[in-house]
Length: 391
Image (cartoon, rainbow, N blue to C red; front, side, top):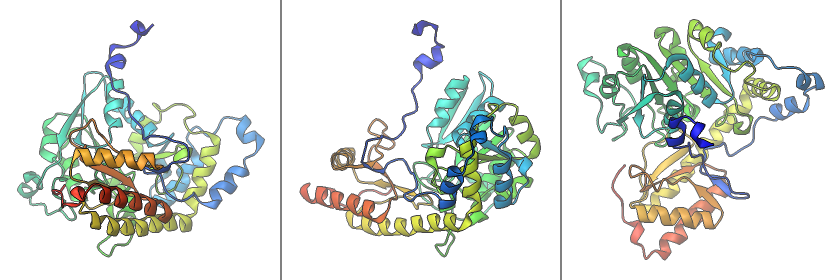
């Protein structure tokens, strides 16, 4: 029966989510290591029969209102999705027709490719740059916080693709690197199209003092300055609700009005709406989740130094460690998995096959990960402790 399928579906590669193995310690899918707000559980437990019997609010009005309060926008600037992946689908449907082009730096979140293929759209990859794009200097722009070698935004190359939509994950996945706001602004100002700023991990970005930066590094406070920018947020990371499937999209009121026509009628269920509002309202627990993750991130980084590994400066709840060789990365991944710890490894991708992406867990999980690696390296005759090349 496959002959009736669209050729693009038959030939496309499916998105490969992180492994799910019962009872394993999951340091491979960037979920939050601690549970959601107790207010979330209380709110879900208090759901009434009628809330399940009846359709939910089609626009998730109470979530929109809570998001407007937290992010200092109007509710009409917010679209609520069944995860930020749903928001991405809405964007694809709203702006791109078969034959159009979209673009992104590479490597990045590979679901962009999957959704583009489904939509019949060509997606262009532009490699991250070793140094800042010369267009910045030509425009007299000095950007802050963008000094990670090999992870500078390829502004000129992205513009040269002729893409109608450009996707920028900041912090990026899998590198965990942050794109400075000045670079995003230049790209948006030169783009004849839509810039999607995917801020799934930005709550873990820190200021110069090492403290959570809040909205200071987000595009959301700048929404009024560029009407061609859309910002995505998710509850899967810093709100610890990956299982709830909830995402937010921020844009001008005009764009949100039109994109609401494109989303599914009741795309967010009643339970998730109740949970999402409660999560947004409990700022104390949210702050605790972020700070606890950053504290553990600092601990993990301090431990990994002893292995001679390197990684780009992380602004997320994970880091991308260069371990030195494809063979070592594969061995460590397999050893960790055999002992019940999952990390992300891309053995089929040359751009990533010498690296492991490690999610920040609770201390006990982090200690187990470090202990297994220590033992494996010691058994490897010390060959892997030589300092590898920088990423």
